[in-house]
Image (cartoon, rainbow, N blue to C red; front, side, top):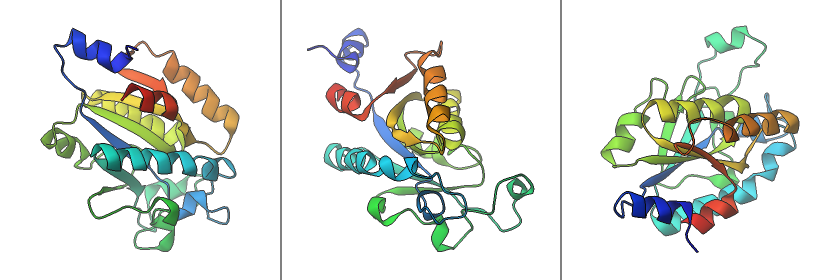
Length: 201
């Protein structure tokens, strides 16, 4: 069966997409229900699928990037309705144990929503010859969305895994996913499930 990737490879002279996965903010402060800014019940639901994505990355030697909030206590964001979260060098700013990074994984410490904003992610991915990022994590309408659009802005193709993302409110997640699916940036920006992504590899 011809997949999207194999079709593109034919059209581009057998050029294989070079993929990296970006997992945003799967931190104790967001995923633990007693954290200061919990995503709620939707967050833990995506953990098993993210574990499968991590397994795919390990098997396929696909770079794995954890993009994590890493904020000072007096951060500008805390002047909004956001409670302090992701504070530097606290347990709340650590990735949950179920998705714990390994030594070969890249940790990107970010001050704002996008994994690209004032980090070295862009130059690192280009040094690795990556042309496509696969995005999952929380929250769909904030850091996932910002990272996806910034990925396009930095000339990367983007795949958002809709069942590997979560928001505190399911309707909000579904709305953002519907916007991304209707984007005129297709096929530079694509949305699919983890199963669809695995099938396309």
